[in-house]
Image 1 (cartoon, one colour):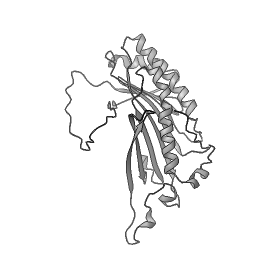
Image 2 (cartoon, one colour):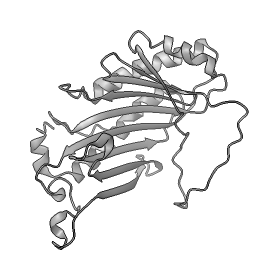
Image 3 (tube, helix red, strand yellow):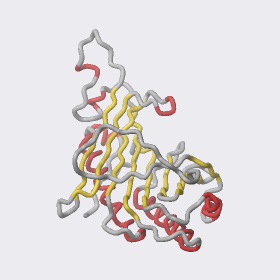
Length: 268
């Protein structure tokens, strides 16, 4: 798949996350968490423990919108997810028994480093993780899902919602005697490969006001794209992140108005 040409000099991006998910490494245990950090400690001196992220794989067939409670019988405590941050908290790696992730987090006055640079940085960190896995006899890293997330915060200011996002009912479309309070929208789209085979989904979240961290002045537009890679090999699967990026770019371009593209200084 060719590259989807879309670039802004001042995009509303606040966070980008690359993630590879794989079958749980049988040899990974709590005692190895500190050893894992040693492979990244020089660049990521800040470390925190977090709860594990669930192992989720996009499946196709009959939709089941009702989640049933699940009882898990565990013969040992859950191994924590390790969150390692750079000193300026602009970059992070996340490690758990079935996932490795790399994040760029916007800081004041920082510019978006661009997809190609972030993907190159992610690839280098994946190499370190694979080295850690190999040297500690953790077993084969068999990737079952790739995930790319873009988080946008778009200032609403004095604009109506439909001035920013296409086909969204704004305040002016409703009777004056009722007051607009909140918009929360979740969309799912199927991602297909060149052979028209279903390989994943694009999950889009649109919220206004964006109550994340008490921020009520921005529209939250979040894309999370997931696919099953053609190769289970982590190094080979990295090339397929371009599919995820193209999918997100196409959706962002179609959902947002051209006036906003000018405001963000579109380059491509």
